[in-house]
Image 1: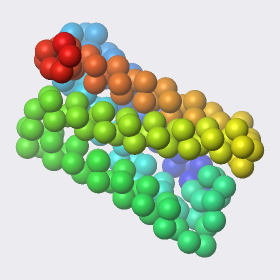
Image 2: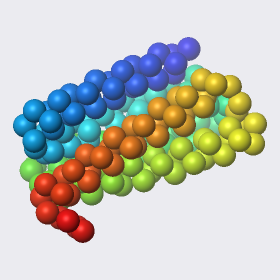
Image 3: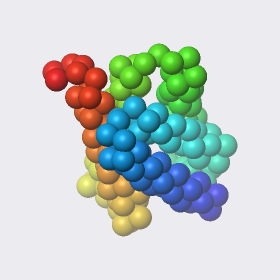
Length: 160
């Protein structure tokens, strides 16, 4: 039950973060503050996967006796969150922030593919799993990619 609460909180934080990011982006025509907000929304995933690993395992349909998988996923989220915080605190710049967003988006996209595969194979077939682990996660990644591309275009980086 606690992982469900953490998941709901995580989705709310992400939704509010994305809404604020869009507001700032369209209000100021500047992707930098939006990118910074997007970078910080991933921290809460660490708590759901590590602190509440037993209920998280049940939610994902995994073995809860060995929390290694949840710890690895949680530590990956924490590592990206800590590097993102360092980037913001030490002013590494927009290019570093965009690279972090792209890295996190790719990581999440791979997890989405795994969850979609599990859903298609009927390993986990309830609608809540599909919506939370595939649909909402994909929408989050799509928004992350929007801000990454907007930042690249604004700063005239990469192919722009």
